[in-house]
Amino acid sequence: MSQLKDAILSVTASGDKAFIPYIMAGDGGLEKLKPIILRLQELGVTAIEVGIPFTDPVADGPTIERAGERALASGTTLRKVIETLTSFADEITVPLVAMTYLNPILAYGVEQFAADASVAGIRGLIIPDMPLEESEVVHPALTAAEISLVQLVSLTSTPERMERLTKASEGFIYAVTVNGITGARSSFANELEAHFKKIQSYTDTPVLAGFGISTATHVKDFGSFCSGVIVGSKIVDSLVAEDWEAIEELVKASKLAANEVGI
Image (tube, rainbow, N blue to C red; front, side, top):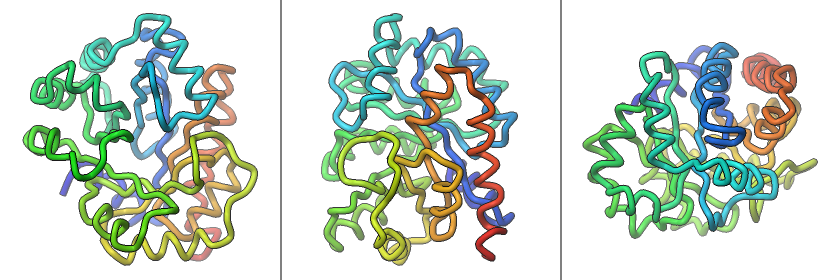
């Protein structure tokens, strides 16, 4: 079992729900990466998704896109992020999940990236612009480095496509909760519970909800029918505002979700 999947299952086995915050590496400068990750660990997050800024993102909403632009302006690159993480890897106690696009990995060199990322504490990888059919470009190197390749499942995926994605996904399944890009939402479609149960029926890999989740209520609601959540835009905004209280409230909601819904 992968370290990432094991971390999530350990949390859910205890009755809590997994909570994965998304941060944009280099937003405010790479020197902030270490204190942010160490503080999130202290709050009890399950894993941390580390976004790599990219010049042409396809999945990012306005908040994360602006964070990426700030990170790029400060000189952040994939290689510099890996180097920074490596400098304090012995202090990282939770799995890191890198979110980047395919071109930076190809430019870095797939095998070298996988090897360096593993040393840096990266245990999962999300590549939103890489279709499942092209995953063999990176998958062998990631497997050798014990890095899980996480697949995204959208609301519009056909049952056949959904089954293929869920069976291929490693670590966890990133179930997208809305059609479109990332960003905070005030409400979600009523049929999401059935959709999530359909996804979970194909696999024993944990299903986590992502995109648009921004309140403690959202965290608790999704915790009633999936293994946990990924929170992005709200975390990014809170870090910019240095509002750790808001982040702590979200993390606490994941620890209360299972008990409150009677699971």
